[in-house]
Image (cartoon, helix red, strand yellow):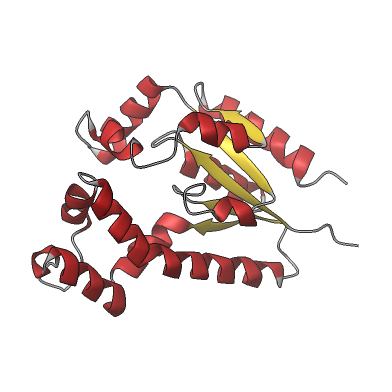
Length: 203
């Protein structure tokens, strides 16, 4: 008899390595749901793009009618009221799509596990649909280094965005497993493999 399919939710701070760990789990056999990708795609659907331009202006659309995400981020991450407004526009549709994808994976005989990579896993109550919550622990200096290398953000951007996410200690506190992502990629992968064998392939 096949084991019950588990949904693994990944949480942690900005640039802690959540997507890296999600990719490692995918390489071990999990089906990946990327919430950020879903949100990015939803931003440019006709309905949501209209809501965004109605609130913040048509100047946020480029020549092809696509929402300029960097310009939108500059507005919403400067004001709690504005980020709440954006979340209220996008999150209901995103959560609906995430739940639909989870149901689809549950129906497939080949699914071993589902990994949900969502920046606002806790804040959006997506944690309630996860069987296991995995916290990615990474110190502040390493997070800053990753941001500067990959996202080219200003030095204060992590701090500005983190204040609109839940406290890291609260996220750590509700998590079932902690992955330490402060050392080498090989060390992190070893922890992920240990997690996989203990929680997913264990008979």
